[in-house]
Image 1 (spheres, rainbow, N blue to C red):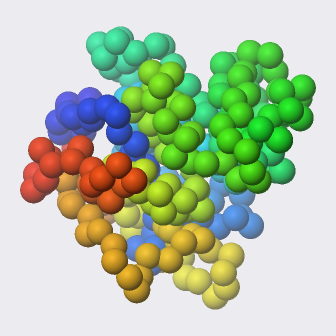
Image 2 (cartoon, helix red, strand yellow; image 1 turned 135 degrees about the vertical axis):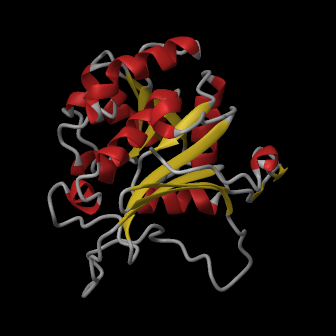
Length: 268
């Protein structure tokens, strides 16, 4: 990790961090186009390595129903996205005292959830509403666990994250799409953002191409400025890492205070 990434991650729990790749003009997903994420990444091996590295560092990987539908064969495991570093990812988890694999966690209200998805064939967690839990418990494989987070029609993300923390998942990687990311931002739950800028222009003639934050408006109005923690480069791709310190229900976050102002060298 230190050879390829140029340093450590210094992730301290509890911490929720998100990972995205976007074009220069800000497109992160094209829902009507299969495998749009790979297209947007422009085939970057460095981007796949960083994705695998973040998965290897995480206790739990948060996925929304939209991302689940867009990845019908996805496993969200580190060795799957970047096989050349499989042994190194496993060693990283051993040294950090983590289980062999991160736990995949699906957040869903039940309407578009696929109970036959192959990622459910290994232990996974489905965070849902009490109403949806009744139906999902009878349709998902027994190896996976359905957890009723709250009443109502939508999953309370604050309670969902608290539920994961109480289960020992202190480092949570969000690999959900821009809608889930917007909801996490709305509740002030995101601590860090890893953002790969791909050297592509996607264009946007209609609303079918999604930006980084979808479904929640931040401006005009009070918002927090992101702190650039590191900037790296591999060929024509930029790898940016930001810290967020949003105001939470229990007060402002101070988790990133020790990292502010640090800008690291290029990705090798």
